[in-house]
Length: 165
Figure 1 (cartoon, rainbow, N blue to C red):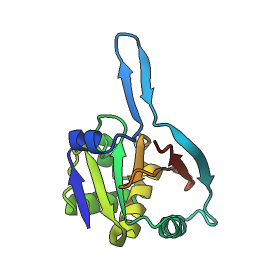
Figure 2: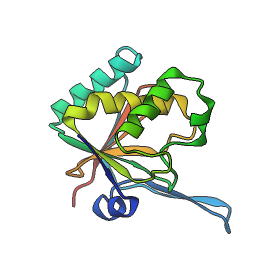
Figure 3: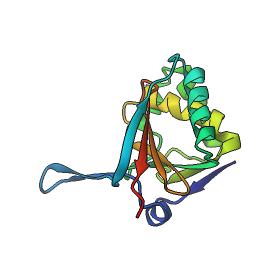
């Protein structure tokens, strides 16, 4: 199952997401990243979308992750204006998938995904990382706040083990 959450609710409930903002007055980026205990990059065996997702699902099963929250570190919509180009068939399918799950073009909140929906959602999420150059501030976390993940367009998965108090 997929549930959408308002951005402000995510910022309150999930305080471990990296945040990015541009300060117009100082003309510089302001970046906040949670403290991590350790960080790892995992490279897929075969860099084809379905294989990348299979490898990631194995990791989630090993970590006993049942739900993930996906979130954009900037206050921008999930779907950029690149959707108008309609160059890539997989991107067009992804937009249809998002719309069918209530994720509209201007949505900028979080998306909570349960383990039964991981495979399909992650495949579409990965297509966005590969096809949309504006789609790179997105991270996802388990609901217990132990891990923070980042999926690179190359298929490599960054796993951050968050520091526990």
